Length: 362
Ligand SMILES: CC(C)(COP(=O)(O)OP(=O)(O)OC[C@H]1O[C@@H](n2cnc3c(N)ncnc32)[C@H](O)[C@@H]1OP(=O)(O)O)[C@@H](O)C(=O)NCCC(=O)NCCS
Image 1 (cartoon, rainbow, N blue to C red):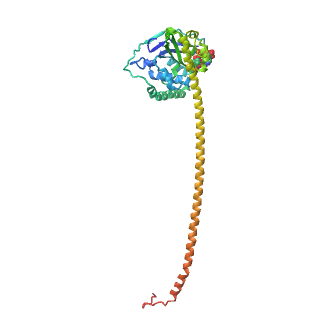
Image 2: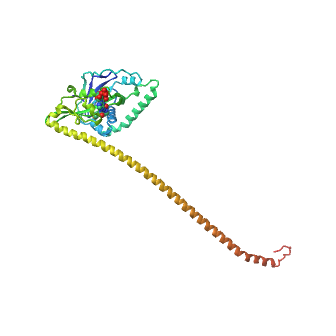
Protein backbone atom coordinates (compact mmCIF):
# COMPACT_ATOMS: atom_id res chain seq x y z
CA UNK A 1 0.00 0.00 0.00
CA UNK A 2 1.35 3.38 -0.97
CA UNK A 3 1.13 6.50 1.16
CA UNK A 4 0.89 6.99 4.89
CA UNK A 5 -2.72 8.26 4.84
CA UNK A 6 -5.26 6.61 2.57
CA UNK A 7 -8.88 7.67 2.65
CA UNK A 8 -11.47 5.17 1.41
CA UNK A 9 -15.15 5.60 0.51
CA UNK A 10 -17.60 6.00 3.37
CA UNK A 11 -19.49 2.89 4.44
CA UNK A 12 -23.08 2.67 5.74
CA UNK A 13 -23.67 0.36 8.68
CA UNK A 14 -27.16 -1.05 8.93
CA UNK A 15 -28.61 2.37 8.23
CA UNK A 16 -27.57 3.50 11.69
CA UNK A 17 -24.44 5.37 10.81
CA UNK A 18 -21.89 5.91 8.12
CA UNK A 19 -18.15 6.15 8.63
CA UNK A 20 -15.12 6.70 6.50
CA UNK A 21 -12.29 4.16 6.66
CA UNK A 22 -8.83 5.70 6.68
CA UNK A 23 -5.63 3.69 6.68
CA UNK A 24 -2.73 5.42 8.43
CA UNK A 25 0.89 4.54 8.94
CA UNK A 26 1.53 6.71 12.01
CA UNK A 27 5.24 5.98 12.17
CA UNK A 28 5.75 7.18 8.62
CA UNK A 29 3.34 10.08 9.10
CA UNK A 30 5.23 11.54 12.06
CA UNK A 31 8.50 11.36 10.16
CA UNK A 32 7.02 13.47 7.41
CA UNK A 33 7.32 17.22 7.25
CA UNK A 34 4.07 18.90 6.09
CA UNK A 35 2.25 15.63 6.64
CA UNK A 36 -1.33 15.48 5.33
CA UNK A 37 -4.15 15.80 7.88
CA UNK A 38 -5.90 12.54 8.69
CA UNK A 39 -9.08 14.41 9.63
CA UNK A 40 -9.79 18.01 8.65
CA UNK A 41 -9.14 20.63 11.36
CA UNK A 42 -7.87 18.00 13.80
CA UNK A 43 -4.21 17.63 14.71
CA UNK A 44 -2.74 14.26 13.64
CA UNK A 45 -1.31 13.90 17.15
CA UNK A 46 -4.82 14.12 18.62
CA UNK A 47 -6.10 11.51 16.15
CA UNK A 48 -3.36 9.19 17.42
CA UNK A 49 -4.32 9.98 21.03
CA UNK A 50 -7.99 9.26 20.31
CA UNK A 51 -7.08 5.95 18.59
CA UNK A 52 -4.88 4.86 21.52
CA UNK A 53 -7.64 5.88 23.96
CA UNK A 54 -10.24 3.83 22.06
CA UNK A 55 -7.98 0.75 21.86
CA UNK A 56 -6.96 1.13 25.50
CA UNK A 57 -10.55 1.37 26.68
CA UNK A 58 -11.58 -1.70 24.67
CA UNK A 59 -8.50 -3.82 25.47
CA UNK A 60 -7.49 -2.65 28.97
CA UNK A 61 -5.06 -5.51 29.67
CA UNK A 62 -2.43 -4.20 27.29
CA UNK A 63 -1.79 -0.76 28.76
CA UNK A 64 -1.58 2.64 27.02
CA UNK A 65 2.19 2.65 26.54
CA UNK A 66 2.30 -0.73 24.74
CA UNK A 67 -0.78 0.32 22.82
CA UNK A 68 0.98 3.47 21.68
CA UNK A 69 4.13 1.50 20.77
CA UNK A 70 2.06 -0.89 18.67
CA UNK A 71 0.13 1.82 16.83
CA UNK A 72 3.30 3.82 16.20
CA UNK A 73 5.53 0.83 15.36
CA UNK A 74 7.30 0.95 11.98
CA UNK A 75 5.39 -1.09 9.44
CA UNK A 76 2.12 -1.01 11.37
CA UNK A 77 -0.95 0.29 9.56
CA UNK A 78 -4.00 1.47 11.47
CA UNK A 79 -7.47 1.29 10.02
CA UNK A 80 -9.58 4.10 11.49
CA UNK A 81 -13.31 4.43 10.98
CA UNK A 82 -14.34 8.01 11.42
CA UNK A 83 -17.81 9.53 11.38
CA UNK A 84 -18.61 12.85 9.82
CA UNK A 85 -18.54 15.73 12.30
CA UNK A 86 -21.99 16.99 11.23
CA UNK A 87 -23.55 13.50 11.63
CA UNK A 88 -22.19 13.14 15.15
CA UNK A 89 -23.44 16.60 16.03
CA UNK A 90 -26.88 15.67 14.73
CA UNK A 91 -26.72 12.48 16.75
CA UNK A 92 -25.92 14.39 19.88
CA UNK A 93 -28.76 16.75 19.14
CA UNK A 94 -31.04 13.77 19.33
CA UNK A 95 -31.98 13.41 15.66
CA UNK A 96 -30.34 10.15 14.73
CA UNK A 97 -32.64 7.31 15.72
CA UNK A 98 -32.50 5.42 12.50
CA UNK A 99 -33.96 2.04 11.70
CA UNK A 100 -31.50 -0.80 11.32
CA UNK A 101 -31.29 -2.13 7.76
CA UNK A 102 -29.26 -4.99 6.36
CA UNK A 103 -25.54 -4.51 6.19
CA UNK A 104 -24.21 -3.98 2.66
CA UNK A 105 -20.63 -2.87 2.64
CA UNK A 106 -19.68 -0.41 -0.04
CA UNK A 107 -16.77 -1.64 -2.17
CA UNK A 108 -13.58 -0.04 -1.01
CA UNK A 109 -11.77 2.19 -3.43
CA UNK A 110 -8.82 4.33 -2.67
CA UNK A 111 -9.68 7.95 -3.25
CA UNK A 112 -6.81 9.92 -1.79
CA UNK A 113 -3.24 8.80 -1.66
CA UNK A 114 -0.85 11.09 0.06
CA UNK A 115 2.65 10.38 -0.97
CA UNK A 116 4.63 10.57 2.24
CA UNK A 117 8.31 10.49 1.54
CA UNK A 118 10.18 9.98 4.75
CA UNK A 119 12.18 13.02 5.80
CA UNK A 120 15.03 12.16 8.09
CA UNK A 121 15.22 15.75 9.31
CA UNK A 122 11.70 15.61 10.67
CA UNK A 123 11.50 14.99 14.39
CA UNK A 124 10.72 11.45 15.47
CA UNK A 125 7.54 10.99 17.44
CA UNK A 126 7.95 9.42 20.85
CA UNK A 127 5.91 8.20 23.84
CA UNK A 128 7.09 11.29 25.76
CA UNK A 129 5.69 13.58 23.08
CA UNK A 130 2.50 11.54 23.12
CA UNK A 131 2.20 12.11 26.88
CA UNK A 132 3.14 15.77 26.69
CA UNK A 133 -0.13 16.87 25.12
CA UNK A 134 -2.19 14.06 26.62
CA UNK A 135 -3.46 15.93 29.68
CA UNK A 136 -4.57 18.85 27.54
CA UNK A 137 -6.30 16.43 25.16
CA UNK A 138 -8.09 14.68 28.04
CA UNK A 139 -9.10 18.00 29.63
CA UNK A 140 -10.50 19.27 26.34
CA UNK A 141 -12.42 16.03 25.76
CA UNK A 142 -13.86 16.25 29.30
CA UNK A 143 -14.82 19.86 28.72
CA UNK A 144 -16.60 18.94 25.46
CA UNK A 145 -18.47 16.16 27.27
CA UNK A 146 -19.56 18.52 30.04
CA UNK A 147 -20.70 21.14 27.54
CA UNK A 148 -22.73 18.49 25.68
CA UNK A 149 -24.34 17.34 28.90
CA UNK A 150 -25.31 20.88 29.89
CA UNK A 151 -26.67 21.80 26.48
CA UNK A 152 -28.30 18.48 25.68
CA UNK A 153 -31.57 19.46 27.32
CA UNK A 154 -32.29 22.35 24.96
CA UNK A 155 -30.60 20.63 22.00
CA UNK A 156 -28.28 23.56 21.43
CA UNK A 157 -25.02 21.68 21.26
CA UNK A 158 -22.39 23.81 19.51
CA UNK A 159 -20.14 22.17 16.88
CA UNK A 160 -17.11 22.85 19.07
CA UNK A 161 -18.52 20.40 21.67
CA UNK A 162 -17.84 17.49 19.29
CA UNK A 163 -14.22 16.40 19.16
CA UNK A 164 -12.13 13.68 17.59
CA UNK A 165 -12.92 11.28 20.46
CA UNK A 166 -16.57 11.29 19.31
CA UNK A 167 -15.73 10.85 15.63
CA UNK A 168 -13.60 7.70 15.73
CA UNK A 169 -15.80 4.64 16.06
CA UNK A 170 -13.30 1.85 15.44
CA UNK A 171 -9.62 1.13 14.95
CA UNK A 172 -7.50 -1.86 13.97
CA UNK A 173 -3.74 -2.34 13.61
CA UNK A 174 -2.14 -4.72 11.16
CA UNK A 175 1.24 -5.47 9.70
CA UNK A 176 2.40 -7.31 6.60
CA UNK A 177 5.30 -9.61 7.37
CA UNK A 178 7.50 -11.61 5.03
CA UNK A 179 8.57 -15.00 6.36
CA UNK A 180 11.99 -16.51 5.55
CA UNK A 181 10.26 -18.76 2.99
CA UNK A 182 8.93 -15.71 1.21
CA UNK A 183 5.37 -16.31 2.46
CA UNK A 184 3.49 -13.18 3.36
CA UNK A 185 1.43 -12.93 6.55
CA UNK A 186 -1.03 -10.22 7.44
CA UNK A 187 -0.96 -9.99 11.21
CA UNK A 188 -3.91 -8.27 12.85
CA UNK A 189 -2.68 -7.21 16.29
CA UNK A 190 -5.44 -4.93 17.59
CA UNK A 191 -9.09 -4.43 16.76
CA UNK A 192 -11.68 -2.45 18.67
CA UNK A 193 -15.09 -0.96 18.02
CA UNK A 194 -16.48 1.68 20.38
CA UNK A 195 -18.93 0.04 22.73
CA UNK A 196 -22.00 1.99 21.62
CA UNK A 197 -21.34 1.05 17.96
CA UNK A 198 -20.83 -2.69 18.43
CA UNK A 199 -23.03 -5.29 16.71
CA UNK A 200 -23.59 -3.01 13.74
CA UNK A 201 -21.23 -4.88 11.44
CA UNK A 202 -18.26 -2.53 11.89
CA UNK A 203 -15.87 -5.24 13.18
CA UNK A 204 -16.97 -7.52 10.32
CA UNK A 205 -16.39 -4.72 7.83
CA UNK A 206 -12.81 -4.27 9.07
CA UNK A 207 -12.23 -8.04 8.74
CA UNK A 208 -13.54 -7.90 5.16
CA UNK A 209 -11.36 -4.89 4.44
CA UNK A 210 -8.30 -6.79 5.66
CA UNK A 211 -9.20 -9.60 3.29
CA UNK A 212 -9.32 -7.15 0.38
CA UNK A 213 -5.79 -7.53 -0.93
CA UNK A 214 -6.22 -4.75 -3.48
CA UNK A 215 -6.42 -2.39 -0.51
CA UNK A 216 -4.06 -3.84 2.11
CA UNK A 217 -1.57 -5.59 -0.16
CA UNK A 218 -0.87 -9.19 -1.09
CA UNK A 219 -0.43 -11.89 1.52
CA UNK A 220 -0.77 -15.65 1.92
CA UNK A 221 -2.54 -15.83 5.22
CA UNK A 222 -4.21 -13.81 7.92
CA UNK A 223 -3.26 -14.16 11.61
CA UNK A 224 -5.00 -12.46 14.50
CA UNK A 225 -3.99 -11.92 18.09
CA UNK A 226 -7.27 -12.63 19.75
CA UNK A 227 -8.66 -11.54 23.05
CA UNK A 228 -10.28 -14.70 24.44
CA UNK A 229 -13.60 -12.86 24.68
CA UNK A 230 -13.58 -12.28 20.93
CA UNK A 231 -12.60 -15.76 19.69
CA UNK A 232 -16.20 -16.35 18.60
CA UNK A 233 -16.01 -13.22 16.47
CA UNK A 234 -12.81 -14.32 14.69
CA UNK A 235 -14.15 -17.85 14.21
CA UNK A 236 -17.13 -16.30 12.51
CA UNK A 237 -14.71 -14.74 10.06
CA UNK A 238 -13.11 -17.96 8.91
CA UNK A 239 -10.13 -18.01 11.25
CA UNK A 240 -9.37 -21.28 12.98
CA UNK A 241 -9.77 -21.84 16.68
CA UNK A 242 -6.94 -21.32 19.17
CA UNK A 243 -4.38 -19.81 16.84
CA UNK A 244 -6.94 -18.18 14.65
CA UNK A 245 -5.35 -19.18 11.42
CA UNK A 246 -6.94 -19.85 8.09
CA UNK A 247 -6.66 -23.11 6.19
CA UNK A 248 -3.89 -21.93 3.96
CA UNK A 249 -1.79 -21.18 6.99
CA UNK A 250 -1.75 -24.84 8.00
CA UNK A 251 -0.38 -26.00 4.66
CA UNK A 252 3.01 -24.35 4.94
CA UNK A 253 5.71 -25.61 7.32
CA UNK A 254 7.18 -22.12 7.66
CA UNK A 255 3.78 -20.74 8.37
CA UNK A 256 3.24 -23.52 10.87
CA UNK A 257 6.45 -22.49 12.65
CA UNK A 258 5.22 -18.93 12.65
CA UNK A 259 1.92 -20.21 13.98
CA UNK A 260 3.80 -21.64 17.00
CA UNK A 261 5.30 -18.22 17.72
CA UNK A 262 1.90 -16.63 17.51
CA UNK A 263 0.56 -19.25 19.91
CA UNK A 264 3.28 -18.27 22.34
CA UNK A 265 2.35 -14.64 22.04
CA UNK A 266 -1.31 -15.40 22.47
CA UNK A 267 -0.60 -17.58 25.50
CA UNK A 268 1.84 -15.04 26.85
CA UNK A 269 -0.86 -12.42 26.66
CA UNK A 270 -3.11 -14.75 28.65
CA UNK A 271 -0.34 -15.21 31.23
CA UNK A 272 0.10 -11.44 31.47
CA UNK A 273 -3.65 -11.10 31.96
CA UNK A 274 -3.59 -13.64 34.82
CA UNK A 275 -0.53 -11.96 36.36
CA UNK A 276 -2.27 -8.59 36.17
CA UNK A 277 -5.25 -10.06 38.04
CA UNK A 278 -2.92 -11.59 40.66
CA UNK A 279 -1.13 -8.28 41.00
CA UNK A 280 -4.44 -6.49 41.52
CA UNK A 281 -5.39 -9.00 44.22
CA UNK A 282 -2.01 -8.57 45.90
CA UNK A 283 -2.36 -4.80 45.75
CA UNK A 284 -5.77 -5.09 47.42
CA UNK A 285 -4.22 -7.31 50.12
CA UNK A 286 -1.37 -4.83 50.66
CA UNK A 287 -3.90 -1.99 50.92
CA UNK A 288 -5.95 -3.99 53.41
CA UNK A 289 -2.87 -4.78 55.53
CA UNK A 290 -1.73 -1.17 55.35
CA UNK A 291 -5.05 0.11 56.64
CA UNK A 292 -4.96 -2.52 59.40
CA UNK A 293 -1.46 -1.38 60.31
CA UNK A 294 -2.65 2.22 60.41
CA UNK A 295 -5.48 1.20 62.72
CA UNK A 296 -3.07 -0.66 65.02
CA UNK A 297 -0.72 2.35 65.04
CA UNK A 298 -3.62 4.59 65.99
CA UNK A 299 -4.63 2.21 68.81
CA UNK A 300 -1.04 2.11 70.10
CA UNK A 301 -0.85 5.86 69.94
CA UNK A 302 -4.08 6.15 71.97
CA UNK A 303 -2.80 3.70 74.60
CA UNK A 304 0.51 5.55 74.89
CA UNK A 305 -1.37 8.81 75.24
CA UNK A 306 -3.60 7.40 77.95
CA UNK A 307 -0.57 5.97 79.77
CA UNK A 308 1.21 9.31 79.61
CA UNK A 309 -1.89 11.08 80.93
CA UNK A 310 -2.04 8.56 83.75
CA UNK A 311 1.62 9.13 84.62
CA UNK A 312 1.16 12.86 84.41
CA UNK A 313 -1.82 12.68 86.76
CA UNK A 314 0.15 10.55 89.24
CA UNK A 315 3.12 12.89 89.11
CA UNK A 316 0.80 15.84 89.60
CA UNK A 317 -0.79 14.17 92.63
CA UNK A 318 2.66 13.37 94.03
CA UNK A 319 3.77 16.95 93.54
CA UNK A 320 0.58 18.20 95.19
CA UNK A 321 1.09 15.93 98.19
CA UNK A 322 4.75 17.01 98.49
CA UNK A 323 3.79 20.66 98.38
CA UNK A 324 1.00 20.18 100.97
CA UNK A 325 3.49 18.32 103.26
CA UNK A 326 5.96 21.16 103.00
CA UNK A 327 3.18 23.67 103.78
CA UNK A 328 2.32 21.69 106.92
CA UNK A 329 5.94 21.57 107.92
CA UNK A 330 6.31 25.30 107.45
CA UNK A 331 3.24 25.92 109.53
CA UNK A 332 4.55 23.68 112.28
CA UNK A 333 7.87 25.48 112.24
CA UNK A 334 6.12 28.80 112.48
CA UNK A 335 4.12 27.55 115.36
CA UNK A 336 7.31 26.39 117.07
CA UNK A 337 8.90 29.79 116.66
CA UNK A 338 5.81 31.67 118.05
CA UNK A 339 6.43 31.23 121.94
CA UNK A 340 9.79 33.07 121.75
CA UNK A 341 8.16 36.03 120.19
CA UNK A 342 5.44 36.15 122.83
CA UNK A 343 8.08 36.22 125.62
CA UNK A 344 9.90 38.97 123.82
CA UNK A 345 6.65 40.94 123.49
CA UNK A 346 5.96 40.36 127.16
CA UNK A 347 9.46 41.58 128.12
CA UNK A 348 9.06 44.63 125.92
CA UNK A 349 5.75 45.56 127.52
CA UNK A 350 7.34 45.27 131.00
CA UNK A 351 10.06 47.89 130.15
CA UNK A 352 9.20 51.50 131.38
CA UNK A 353 8.48 53.87 128.57
CA UNK A 354 10.75 56.92 128.30
CA UNK A 355 8.81 60.15 128.15
CA UNK A 356 10.19 62.97 126.00
CA UNK A 357 9.92 66.50 127.35
CA UNK A 358 7.10 67.00 124.83
CA UNK A 359 5.30 64.11 126.44
CA UNK A 360 5.65 61.73 123.52
CA UNK A 361 6.57 58.23 124.46
CA UNK A 362 9.62 56.65 122.68
C1 LIG B 1 -14.81 -7.97 18.78
C2 LIG B 1 -15.36 -6.66 18.23
C3 LIG B 1 -14.25 -5.98 17.46
C4 LIG B 1 -16.54 -6.95 17.31
O1 LIG B 1 -16.94 -5.77 16.71
P1 LIG B 1 -18.47 -5.52 16.21
O2 LIG B 1 -18.50 -4.33 15.36
O3 LIG B 1 -19.38 -5.54 17.38
O4 LIG B 1 -18.70 -6.84 15.36
P2 LIG B 1 -19.90 -7.12 14.33
O5 LIG B 1 -21.03 -6.20 14.59
O6 LIG B 1 -19.33 -7.11 12.99
O7 LIG B 1 -20.30 -8.57 14.79
C5 LIG B 1 -20.67 -9.51 13.93
C6 LIG B 1 -20.97 -10.80 14.69
O8 LIG B 1 -19.78 -11.29 15.32
C7 LIG B 1 -20.15 -11.90 16.57
N1 LIG B 1 -19.48 -11.18 17.64
C8 LIG B 1 -19.28 -9.86 17.78
N2 LIG B 1 -18.56 -9.60 18.88
C9 LIG B 1 -18.32 -10.79 19.45
C10 LIG B 1 -17.60 -11.18 20.60
N3 LIG B 1 -16.99 -10.28 21.39
N4 LIG B 1 -17.53 -12.51 20.87
C11 LIG B 1 -18.14 -13.40 20.10
N5 LIG B 1 -18.82 -13.09 18.99
C12 LIG B 1 -18.90 -11.80 18.66
C13 LIG B 1 -21.64 -11.78 16.72
O9 LIG B 1 -22.23 -12.96 16.24
C14 LIG B 1 -21.99 -10.65 15.80
O10 LIG B 1 -23.26 -10.74 15.30
P3 LIG B 1 -24.47 -9.98 16.06
O11 LIG B 1 -24.16 -8.53 16.05
O12 LIG B 1 -25.66 -10.31 15.24
O13 LIG B 1 -24.54 -10.51 17.45
C15 LIG B 1 -15.89 -5.73 19.36
O14 LIG B 1 -16.78 -6.47 20.16
C16 LIG B 1 -14.81 -5.17 20.27
O15 LIG B 1 -14.27 -4.11 20.00
N6 LIG B 1 -14.49 -5.88 21.36
C17 LIG B 1 -13.49 -5.43 22.35
C18 LIG B 1 -12.09 -5.54 21.80
C19 LIG B 1 -11.73 -6.93 21.34
O16 LIG B 1 -12.05 -7.92 21.96
N7 LIG B 1 -11.01 -6.99 20.19
C20 LIG B 1 -10.60 -8.23 19.56
C21 LIG B 1 -9.27 -8.68 19.94
S1 LIG B 1 -7.95 -7.66 19.44
